[in-house]
Length: 117
Length: 117
Figure: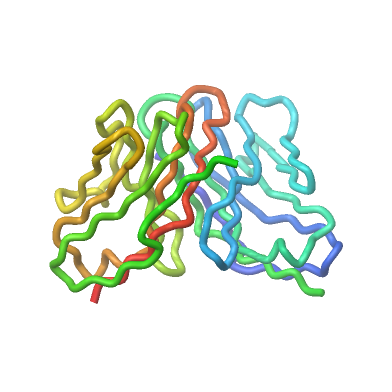
């Protein structure tokens, strides 16, 4: 079974500053994928970034980067140059690449990010 | 840009009534999913569907729930006899392929909010 822990229920960041959202995970699967999704107040789930467990480099997508530390089982999301539109819930999720559970994402409880002008 | 569409956006029903939530996945996607999010809580996997059959389901997906792909475009979630605790946002998602060392990114719809009175 997989488990995702997001210990920050809420975070504040000043506009244009960088912010790190924490995510730790637990799994016994040797190969897995880690995901971050954004959920604005309108409710939809927006895919942000993906990291494979065997990827050598940390994933980056525009202002989003994933600080992947495999030994620590952490996959923190870094948002650079925060914008007001970044205010949303952010969910970390994972799935194993093969075997039982590979069709389903396991989500954390989320972190609510508020960007202050 | 192709997207997953869901209807209705909001449905209010009486306890014990049957509800059908509809989804049109992205046209070239092969794998379909339902997730739910009880207000203020994390997103939970319900079921995945491929090749006209369920590939995985969670403990939440009991006999009250069923899924169907009645034609080439729609994917439905039926709740036979709704309970108060079924009140939640239900998300449909689709992906090209879900497993293996690839992104397996899920594209989510905007959700259907179900309120059971």
